[in-house]
Structures are given as structure tokens and as C-alpha cells.
Image (tube, rainbow, N blue to C red; front, side):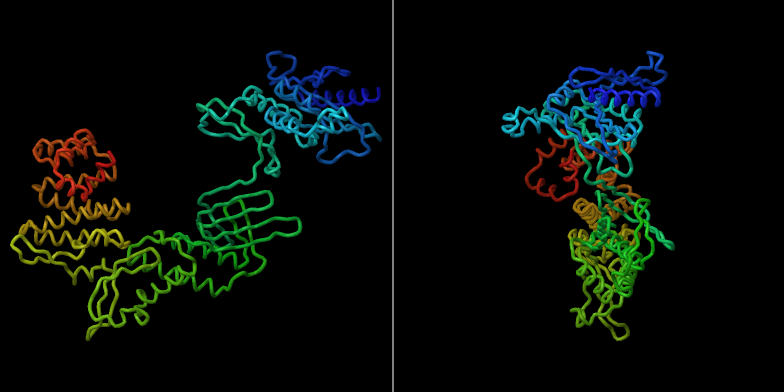
Length: 597
């Protein structure tokens, strides 16, 4: 009898709570003897007087227990296997336990939403348990469930969340064989999520089919949350944009700045442990940003990482002068590398340790910027030579000039006006006589691929000057320039560096404008265009005109068919070629487009 009064008191208090909140109509008979369920709470979208407002019915089980003092935030309660199996069979239940304080009969409720995904996990766990001792004692297997205090959420919100998630977890779908499905996407859902308990909350993972159908897969917890984006790093006196990867765990977070500066912070009740690590930089731009932020951190000012994290170091971790020296080195290298050599500061440098990168920067500063050859083989070099100068994996083409009576030895950017005006290459013309050409026209394809400082403006302008002076004198020079353009296109295909394709495009366009009769050069010009974008209808019409004109030229017909995306005709032309023609074709950039048809 005492137990029935306790249960009735718990039920009545829950009914009062539901009615006070509104839009809830409890149907929980006292003294109910139905197995596993005590009743249900009806959820309405409006007045409970209007039947049209009824939206959901939530099955509930209500237990009562006397206590001397209320539990604070949570409590445990044991549930029998048979009840758990019934809950699963009917798609879940909300379990309430009302604590009745002996001194004043006040009631505090705790609750647990039991849905099919969690129920199936608990049931499997109990069914697989070694039950010999329990069988001897005649006990039914049971599971101790943790319940949360109801005061953390409104009854209305909790029940509506449960009803919404209950629809996503019908028992038949929970039991469905998932391995035969290929899910397009996945979705995480939760019953209730507060900002301060993300890593304590229970989530449900669903697989999505056809953008609409979902299958419940498992119950899970979030272990780590990450954000990767460009954001602002701010101090009281400075602001800079940086690429940040921020990840949170329950008692820790990490920040990775520009893939280089790694900050790890573990949070405990007693103290926060912070560690910093400089990783291998991928390019010099990342390294400069990382060192700039490190300098701010080292100054112990308040530092904002986006809108999420604020940090300040309690003491200096590095020498201020050491950080300043590195930043000064990066600044002067950036000036010469970017402004003089036209090499972007975010060019990949390869996989090298920080120490190796700094040594490379120092060597570049000493030899190229300061022109100090005392520690190089150039110290005693008596003849002018071209040099592949390496800064980690960045290779720049430089020209060395030995000392003269009036001038000291000098290392210069090969793509500079001084070199263009003073150095030339030579080729034989159709009569066998040597003709001087710009130094950039005689470069090998491998050199173009290695050199990060290829300068479009310098290459095109020197070629334009040469064409203006020689185009009418000797067509052999035009063929040489045309062949160089093919090297530029091949080099682009191997490196995907836009400046190489731009050189070919600009020079070929210039040849066509200066010599409209060079119609076949248009084929290679349109190769360049096709590598950038789709051809327009007007451009295709011009190519069709070339096709009509050169239909008897097998090689031209092949190239035109490739440009027009006609694979069948391209295959036919290729099959008709001799082995010698095919061998020549393999070396030409049109073959790259052909392979990708």
C-alpha cells in the first residue's frame, strides 16, 4: 500500500506539472497495472480543448521513491530486461522517477528518454551477459539507467524533442540490415543540446538515402569538434588574417595556424597546460604568419583566435630578439623573392624541417641579396653561367656575371631587363647563318618546368621586340618561336603553372596578329584557350574553317578533331598515322588533350 501511495503521489505531481506548462494533457491512471507502461502524455499545438490540435502521444512510465535529500543533477534507476524489450517493441518510452522528500513531501523529477537505438544496444548487452548466477537466484536481468533532473529543461520541450526523434527511429528501421545500403550523407540528431554539455550529450547517427529517407544507425557521443577556415587573429594593437584549424575536446582544444604553429591546451580544474610547437612549413607565407602570431603570443598580450578562443601566455617562451631575427629574414626574402624574382610567397617549398628552411633563407639572403659569394663555388668563377638556385624546393633561374675591371661579380635574375638587353641565344636561319634570338626563346622545357621565376611580361616583350625586327627577314625564326611555345604548353601540362601557359598564349596571339597568314599557328593558340576554358561557338566556327581548308593534312585534321572534342574522328586519324608520326605526336601538347577526350 505504501508503494502505491508513493507512485500515486509521483503521478499526480507529474500531471500537475504537465497541466501547468500548457499544451500537454496527461493520461496516467493511478494504480495502473498495465505491463511496462503507466500511461501517456498528449502533446498539442494549441488548446487541448480542440482535438485538431493533437500532434503526438508520448508513452511514459512513472516511478516514485522516498528520499531523505534530493539528488542534485542525476540519479540511477534499475530497469528489467522485459520492460526494456516492451519499450523497444512500442518505439520507446520516457521514464520518470519522482523523488519524494520525507520531510515535506516535495517531489523532484528525474527523467530518461529511452529510444529504439539506445534500447537495442542495452538489450543486446543484457542478452549477452553471463547469466548463470542470475538464473540460479531466479533473478531477471536488469540495467541501471542514469536519469537527469527535469529542472534542466521544460517538460514541454523534452517531450516534443522525444516525439520528434521517436519518428526517426521506428523499430523496424533500427533492426534493418544496413550493410546493403550506400548512404549519400549522414545526419546527427540529439534530444537536447545545451552549449555547455556538447561532449556529454547523446547523439543519434542517421544514414540518408535519396536526400529524404533516413535510417537510424547508432547512438553515439561527440569526441571532437573541428573548425577549419580563414579567420582574424587579433591583439589590442594588431589584426591579421590567418588560416586556422581549431578542434575541441571535452577538456582540451588545439589550434593549428597556417599548418605550422600548433597550440595545444588541456583544461583541468587546477590549471591549464599550454604547449606550442612549430611544424614543418609548407610555404614561406605560412611561416611568416605563424612567426608573427608567435611573436604576439610571446609578448603576453591578450590574443583572439577568431571569435572562439582568447589566449594570453603567463610568461615568455622564446627570445624576443630570436623571433625578430626570423621575421626580419622572412621580410627581406619576401621583398626580393616576390618583387624581384616574381615568385609568389605561397609557392610550396617541400617537406623540410624548420631549421633547414631557415638555413636556406639565410643562404639566399647572403648570396642573392647581399651578393656574398665567399662561401660558394662562385667565388672563383671566371665565366658567365646560368644557375639553378634552390631555396628548398623553389628553383629560380639566375645569371652569374664574373667581375670585370670596372664591375664586381654579380648574380642577377635571369628574367630581368639587364639580361634581356645583354644576353642572347643563336639559331641557324634557312641559309645556315646564325641569328640572335632573345635568351628566353632558347630555354629547354625542363628548365621552364624547374624555374619558378618565369616572367610572362619579360618573355613576351623581348619576343615582341625580336619579331618586330626580324619577322619579315626570316621565317625560320618564326618556327623557332612557335616551337618554344609548344615547350611552354608541355611545361604547363607537367606543372600546372599558369604563367607558362600565359607565355605561350600571349606569344601565339602576337604571331597571329603580326602574321595573319600563319593559320596553322591558330591550332596551337586554341590549344592554350581550351586549357583555360571551353571554346566559344565563334572560335569553333573558325576551327571548322581550318578543317575545311586542311582536310587532306592528317596531322592537322587530328589536331582539329581533338579541339572540337570529336573523339571518333581523332581516333580514326591517329590510327592512320605512321609509327614515326605517332612518335612525334607523343611529344606534342595536343596529345595531352587527346588522352583526356
